[in-house]
Structure formats: structure tokens, C-alpha cells
Image (cartoon, rainbow, N blue to C red; front, top):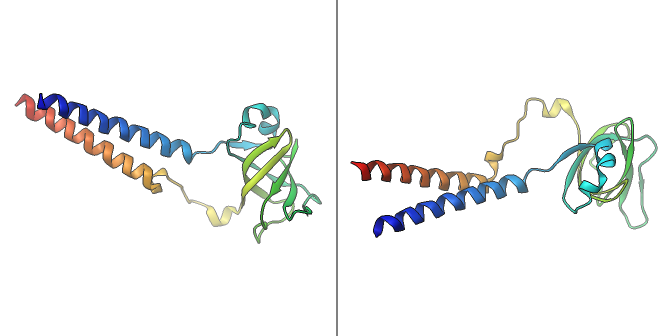
Length: 160
């Protein structure tokens, strides 16, 4: 009877670690889109989920709104969307420069951005981001590995 409880515990540990790893992965991965993709597949992204959109800031399009939001047009050379950013733009923000905005699509050609990153290739060259820096992902990996090792060792000892 003790062996069955051990199998159940090991199985639960494996399931929990898989769920934690999946949750960590999906919560930190945001779709990366061009302006044209957002406009063409707009209905897909108006679900309240965050998207990352890469484009260039259109010339003479940036302005402040009455409520203090920063408003500008983002283009990929073919199509453009309006971006409302709550907050001050980064210091190196310029019209014509490539930026990545992260936020939610609120209507067909309008994105409400919560984050804005100015592309600066020389600064970020060779830098790689990794899910391994996410503590939830690390914990899930450690628990899953420990459960798998325990399970394998237990099976080997049981057969001996």
C-alpha cells in the first residue's frame, strides 16, 4: 500500500511541475507582431491579451492628449496604428525610430501601450533573454527534475 502512495505523490509532483512550467512560459511570452499583422488579424488580438508590436514612429505624429497620455502613430511602412502610451516616452524616443510597444488592442487601429521600448541595436547586440531567469520557471524545473530523479531511483531500487 505504501508503494501506491509513493506513486501518487511522485505523479502529483510531476503534474504540478509541468503546470508551473507551462504557466511561467505562457505568462512571460507575448506575441510579437508587425503593424500590418495587427491590422489584418485585428479580431484575433482584441481579446484583452497583451501584444508586442514593432514599428517605426511616424513623422509628425507624436503629441500629448488632454488627459496626459502620449499619442503617436506606429507604422511598418505599409500601414499604421495609433498608440496611446500612459506615461512619458523614453529619453531616446524620436520620430522615425523603431520602437516596440507592449499593450492591448482596444479597437481596429488603436493600441493602448503599457510599455514602450526604443530599439537600439548597438546597445542590445548579442544579448539573449532566457526563461531561466524567471524564478517560477526555475522552481518548476527543479521540482520536476527532483520528482523525475526520485521516480527513476525508486523504480531501480524496487527492481533490485
